[in-house]
Every structure is written in structure tokens, then in C-alpha cells.
Image (tube, rainbow, N blue to C red; front, side, top):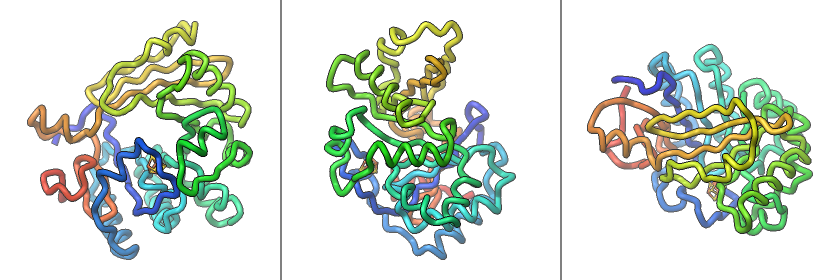
Length: 279
Ligand code: SF4
């Protein structure tokens, strides 16, 4: 198995639910597998981490909404035991359960200790529009995110959106960065909808940093720079890493995903036996 870019990623997709109903959510359409019970989930995950090739130094925790999943805290406790295996543990969340976690010392402590980066999805700078985009029972306000940022620190949090402006792109990007700064956040990521590998023109218009970082791989294109002390990243990714595997018909692994059904996959099409792996 050849590892691409020397930086493969291990994703842990926590069993449901999600409190939002975003129209663009790919999970609603794609994730149909049944979750295993918590005991089996932890047991299988332990086995997988033991066997994971050493090149996997980075873990992403994602899911439906990981911060309200009852699997989150046991998963973090497990990752704490394997702390020397990973340099980076990223939690991607809409923020819902984090406000509650701040009230419980033990959970707060574990998140702070184990998670190195928190990506908070916030699709608009306008609070009311966010409530509409997320729909469902989502009700996280700017003041909640300000509290989260205050607790975990400005550089641990990235405010990210699926970049799909409903107004002038430059105006949107500037207002979004300002909103992040107002909440005490110094890192912003504009995600380009999956499948489009090109970065929009506005990314180049926005800055005059003479040292932008431009990274292109088969999996993603990332363009980053600083604006007044805030790190801005534009990132586009392929739809599904396994698509690349099948197109190229090779056995390179870019990403491994531990799914709610307790199986390991080479992509995001859970239940698809062609993507199921046994280490
Ligand atoms: S918050 Fe994430 S998982 Fe939940 S509906 Fe929106 S995109 Fe889907």
C-alpha cells in the first residue's frame, strides 16, 4: 500500500444524530449504515488504531454532529490513550454540543487535552441566515461561539463555511472574516463545494500577502495567507478519495474512514463492500 503525499488522514465518523438539516448535507443521502453499539465501536476502533500504519499521524473526528454524539467522549478517552500515535486531532462540528461541554469539567478537560484543532462550521456572517441555513433544531448564536473561542483559544478554532455567497463574493468574504474576528477567532477556512478543484478568483483579490501558501495534490487544492493577523485558507477537495483510487486503479491509500457500523473504509461510501478494508 503506497501512501500518498506522506500525510494520509484517518477519519472517525461518529454515529448520529445531527440537530441541523442543511440542504447541502451529503450525509443525509449517503450515510445509510447502521451504527454498532458503543462497546463494539470502541473495541473495533482500538484494534484498528493498533494496526494503523505509522504514517497516519492525523485524525479527523466528524459525523452527523459529533459534539452531540454519545460516542464522542469515549472516543476521545481512547485517543488520549494513543496520544503518541497522532500529532493532530481535528474535531469538525457545528458547535452545538461544545457549549454544553463547557459546563462539564471532565468533558471540557478531555476536549482541551486531546483535540488539537476545532473546525466550527458557520456558513454565513449573518446570524439569522445561519439559523435558516442550518434549519432543524440548530440554535447556536455568535455569543456561544465567542465563549467557545474564549475557552479553547483563538488559534485552536477555525471558523469555516461552505463558500457559496448569496451576494458580492468579496463583500461576503470580508464580512465573514470580520465576523470571525468579532467572535475572537483568528483562523478562517472557505471550503469550496466538493468536486470543484479550482479556487475562486476572489481568493486572489482579497490579499496582498507576498508569501501565500499554495498546495496542490490529487486530493485537494489549498491556498492560504495572512490578513491582519488572521490566517485565511481556501480549500477545495475531491468528492471522495475512493473515487481517485478507482479511477487510477491503484492501491494507494489517501484516507481511511472508520464508519458508524464499526468497519474501516477507503472512502465515504459506507456499506459499499468495495471500500471495506481489513487491516
Ligand atoms: S450540520 Fe453537517 S451533518 Fe448536520 S445537516 Fe448540516 S452538513 Fe449535515
